[in-house]
Image (tube, rainbow over all chains, first blue to last red):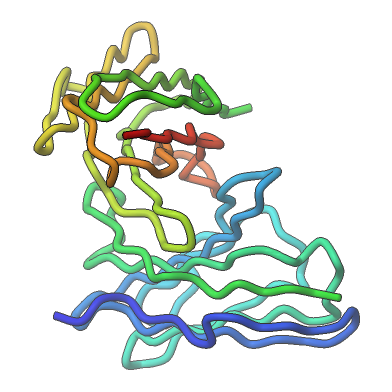
Amino acid sequence: KAGVTQTPRYLIKTRGQQVTLSCSPISGHRSVSWYQQTPGQGLQFLFEYFSETQRNKGNFPGRFSGRQFSNSRSEMNVSTLELGDSALYLCASSDQGTGKETQYFGPGTRLLVL
Amino acid sequence: KNQVEQSPQSLIILEGKNCTLQCNYTVSPFSNLRWYKQDTGRGPVSLTIMTFSENTKSNGRYTATLDADTKQSSLHITASQLSDSASYICVVRTNFGNEKLTFGTGTRLTIIP
């Protein structure tokens, strides 16, 4: 099976712009989670989607949003970008999202906000 | 507040030596604990998942231990190889509340020849 794929791999934006990141989970996986990783804060949970529904959400402002499509592919959107949004954004998929199974991470999208 | 603390922050050892990484947590109620390996520029890869009743779990040269009473876990790497150079992240899960996963900030391990 192909692994989790994320596009684009690298992105440069300026403050105030918006960005959309894409994640394709492993075939058959229905749970997709998004994380932000920065050197100072480490990994932080953004949100989780399961069968097109947001199941959990972390403590991020409303500028961060996401959605999941019927084929389990997911997108994450950040509006009105700030310098502090520069980070590696990771997507992870699992079969049922029960928390007891392995999550498989994609390579990430590295976002730089200037 | 749920927290996961890892030590040391960074570690440098010679190839072939063993090492142990520590993870202390205050997450409650506890569901499971995971160790991930993250190579530079790549996403994390799961090494082990341990539940409350599991004390030890191995994955090749990686052995994780869990003491749920003291809320401590360790990851022992045996006969280190250059490819073990990576960040190792401890993640603790609870089934309560919105933020179910609490991440440690990781230990940066460097293996030198």
